[in-house]
Image (cartoon, rainbow, N blue to C red; front, side, top):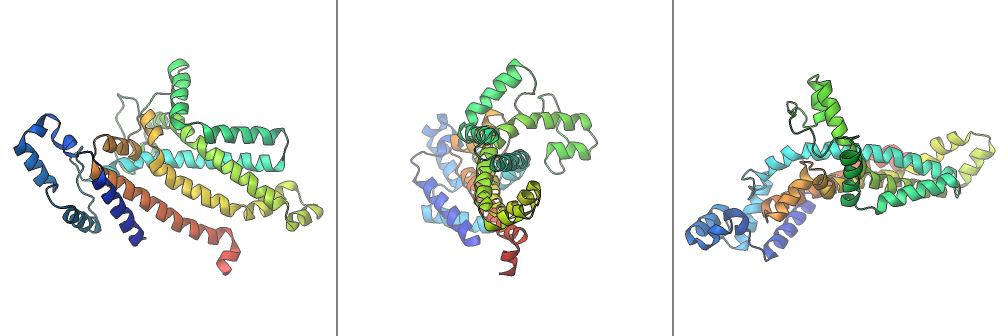
Length: 326
C-alpha cells in the first residue's frame, strides 16, 4: 500500500507539472502577473523557481512526514482542508451507500425470485434508470420539482443559511446534533441530507440490484438449491439462508468499491447541492489550478480504494467459511 500510494502521488505530481496552465494566475492574480517582483516573490514562496526534480523531492519528503503542502486558494494546509471537509462527504456517502445497498439488495432478490415476471421487469427498469441518469441532471430535476415547485424538501446545503452548525465532535451534523441534544437541528440536517443522498444512492441501487439478481440466478441453477427446494424448505429460507450467502461475495466487492468511488466521485452531486465536501473542494481546486489540493484529493482517493480493498478481503473471510479455511 505505501508503494502504491507513492506511485499514485508521483504520477499525479508529474501530470500536474505537464499541464500547460500556469498556477501563478491563481496565486498572485492576473493583475500582478506583469509585476516581476510579485511574481518572483510568489515563485520563491511556493518553491516554483526550483527545478521539477527538486520540487518532487521536496513534496515527497513532506508527504512522508504527513504534510501535503499548502493550498494556493485557501492558504491553509491541504491536510487540514481535507480533514475539515471529509466528514461532510462521509456523511453523504454513508447515507447514500447504506440506503442504496439495502434497496438494491431487496430489488435484486425480488427480481431473481420473480424471474421474467412483472416484478423483475420493474426492478430492472428502475435499476437501468438509476444507472443511466447523470447525477447533475437528476439532481437539478429533484431540486426543481421537490424543492422549488412543491416545497417538500429543503434546498441545497447541509443546513439552512441562518442555522448554526452543531459543535464539532464527529463532523457529522446529524450525529453531532444528537450528541448535543438538539433534536430540531438533527431533523433539519437529516432533511437536508435526503435529496443529495437519494440522487447519489440511486446509482448504487442500479449497480447492486443488477449484480444481486445475476448472482442469485446463477445460484438458483446449482444443485444444492434444487435439493433444498425438494426437501420442502420455504423459499425464503432457500434464498436468504443458502443462496444469498453464496451470492454475497460479488455484492461485497461492488458495495465496497462503490463506497470508495463515491467518496471522491460525488463531485457533481456535491456541486449541484452546494455540499461542502471533498468533491466540491476538488472542483474549486481544479478551477484555480491549485496543484497541492488536487494532488491531496487524488491521494485521498487512492487511500480510500486501497483501504477498501483491504477491508473487502477481510470481509470475504467472514462471508465465506471456505476462504477462512484456506
